[in-house]
Image 1 (cartoon, rainbow, N blue to C red):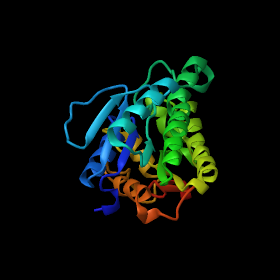
Image 2: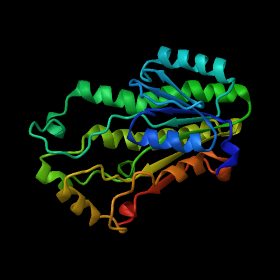
Image 3: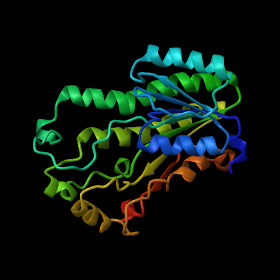
Image 4: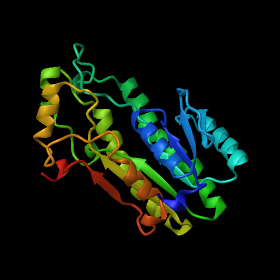
Length: 255
């Protein structure tokens, strides 16, 4: 148990997605008050769980939800910028992800969610943390592909390409992390990032076998292997860490 997370108010963007649900459950088990911001609702009840429909790409939407959260909980302690549009490796006949045909409107939409949304949430929730004058934590979810570029050879049999937006967003998230850590350090706002590797979500077996060969631990991550890292970075146990990116990728980025 991370006892210092007891009664903390934790905001998780994209909290009804695959990773977000794992994080929500972990914080609830540590007696935090968890607020999910998402465009889709989940049928789930817990006395410490709240969810708001919120478009994080719109400043007014975020501004209004900040007011609602402060009115209900009186404080904001932790923000996790987790929302993103991901593209999982699967067979693709239309080559929509190919860089040569990549649509500019799609570029703007995906950067709006994954990068601009993180900036907007950091701006408004971070400012509220500063106003409280009690410090706070911002955790940004990047990726191993925020450290290295995608290896497109992994996807050849699927006729798939990891899109340029994913790589740019996840690299940008690390830049946002460093900037915020430096900018608000004197306000006792700690900002770190996690760069997780891929989790096998019933992917094509040929893809899984190919990517395992690039990972020293010779496997993809299990669905819950990042949870304790997230709790650590949001707790007092990491009290002297800011501007840091913890890479948890089975060693993929070291070779």
